[in-house]
Length: 226
Image (cartoon, rainbow, N blue to C red; front, top):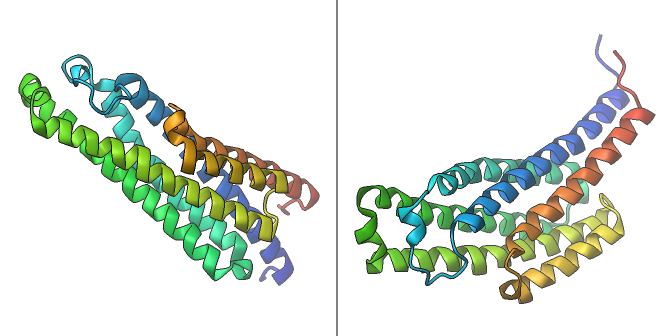
């Protein structure tokens, strides 16, 4: 016997935010761990000597292997949020929201690929690579991609997401305003904060936890029939 339309819609509406929360938590956890490993293994100075290539690159390799899974979770997070918004989605902000998220991922993957190529080549001839122009070019390029362009796109993503949150109310207003504030820090002050790369995953984690808690409350009010 088919389930009544009202119950079907209720169950679908409850599952979507839960999926967004799980994807957001997975993205945040994976990216924070990956960035922390990279930050502790690789000096922040893009003109550094590259001595880390001649010691232990296992932490860097692990971090680079975590980044693709973080990207998958981030895409899932974007997708389920857009599905949750549905007809409330504004075309202008949806374009900025979706486009900035994809650009952030593209730059994140590009920077990770450059570092991965450097690590791969170092396994063959680490001393020659460290003293080469190729290494310094790849290192500086990866730094600019990750710490300039990717972080700026993260700020744009946070601004557009916060605007959508204010418009639709899927998060509290204070959380959206916090997103604006943190995004401005990324856009104009990322050079002043060594750990600015964790701002986006930390904010997504906050949003995801709120969505998950809100979803659990909704489930307690509307329990799914067995």
